[in-house]
Image (cartoon, rainbow, N blue to C red; front, side, top):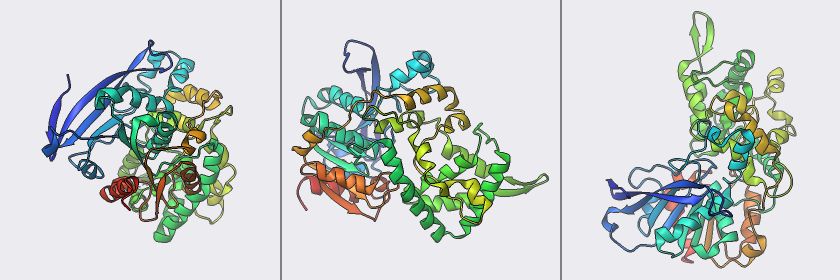
Length: 433
């Protein structure tokens, strides 16, 4: 039985669905999906079209909004919204270090997780859509990886879509993970340079922290082993609109004087542990590179291999000279499965996924070329997480897609400027501008 309750200005209803683990074997094992239905208080009984939101990630449940935060208020002017926890995330059947051993050993776990990519998520959407809308097509809003899912939706089940809205999430249609990360490191370097230009004092601060970490490799309060590579990965913050400022404030009070000498402050360690831990979203680490697998080649820890092509990211070499320590960005590396206690039990599973070669194509260029679904996409200029050139090439390959290219926002534009971003996309999809 569905449970409804209220927050300021909205009525919420918990929805649960049962779907096949493998949609090609519908009579086999099933998993549960959770979604939260949201409607404006004054429209709770109205017959409204549906919008389903696909969260970025992979591996994150749908954002838990309070009332009409971010883009949700604008969406509720026109729609009844379904906030879907994609398979394995949030309140859907979980996939983590505690639950995956129920599958068996690493090989069984890897075989299970192969079914947690965009293609399975879209088939989940199509399985539950008749129960939600009565069979009517709905509008999808895809943020980041949710946009990747949306392009798969346009490739495989466009009949289920009334319109498609994408923010910071147009994938390369045929690029291997190596292409993605080879393009990413120069973007990351530009973001780090911009950060140091804004906060030049952070150059020395980052060097001092990196020197300390390289020497002592401290273990953080939650058991995370802080290596210099892990410290550099805090640069993932630089992909968000407020990220540079957050990184600066984190670095400014990293050290305290103790009877034993200079040490990392408890406050710094606690915040770093929170930022680096994958305890709340382990699927992000496990299947992150798998979202780019589309041919017979393994992803083979692509971000780690591509990093070797950019020696300026070697912190030890930077510290041996007088250059700045460069932060890194949105990437997953094999060492994370040693440093993070939430990932250590899944190390062998992660290696098997990195070696997997039987990936199926996620996108259909021929079908996209004759697309008839109204599509609009926000492309954030020099997005640290998604390559702009790749995104625009894909935009040109989808018939009728309208782009809004902007440097006003970073990758999190739909959160930071939600009503404006969503309003612009709706106007483009409706041919109102």
